[in-house]
Length: 205
Image 1 (cartoon, rainbow, N blue to C red):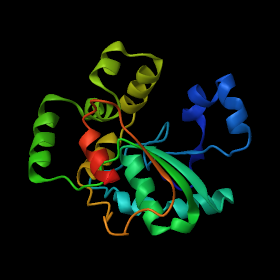
Image 2 (cartoon, rainbow, N blue to C red; image 1 turned 90 degrees about the horizontal axis):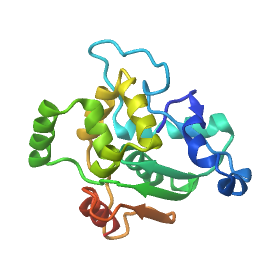
Image 3 (cartoon, one colour; image 1 turned 90 degrees about the vertical axis):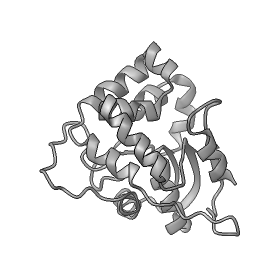
Image 4 (cartoon, rainbow, N blue to C red; image 1 turned 135 degrees about the vertical axis):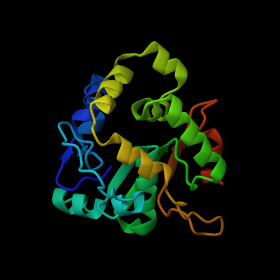
C-alpha cells in the first residue's frame, strides 16, 4: 500500500518477529507501506477530499522504491493491496521480482455487486465491512490477537471510509488471457470456501 514518505515495518512485527522467520528476514528489507491517511495517528481528511484511485496508488510505488534505494521488489498484498501491487507489476514489470497476492479481485464491480455493497453498508459499519474482507466470519468470531489488532487499528483510522469507497469503485485490473498478464512469478492465495475464491480463480485464468 503506497503512501510516499511514510514507510515502516511495524505491522509486520507479529509475523516477522518469530524465531523461524529471523533467518528469512535477515537477508531482506521488509517494508509495510500504508495507504494515504491510514497510517497510525493520521488526521481525518477534509470533506470533499478526492482519495486517489488504486491505479494512482500503484503509480506512487516507484517513488517509495527510489526513496528506499531499492531497484526491484517482491510484493505481498491482500485485497486492495494485492490489486495495487498487481497493477504496479503490469505498469513496471522491470521493478517486480515476484508477487504474493491474497484474495485479489481483478474485476470492476458490476451493478449487482454495487447494490449488494450498498445494502451491506446499511447494516454494517465501514470498519466491519473491511474486516469482513480481510477475515472469515469464523476468524472474526474467535478474534485471535491478529484479528483484534486489525480491528482496533481499522476502527481508529479516520479515513477508512474513503479508502474502502475507492476500492469498491475500482476499474478492471487489465489482465488479458492472450499474453497481457504479469511477467513475474505470481503466487495467488485464497482460503477454501472464501468469498474471494471465484475472483482468484478468474485472476488465475
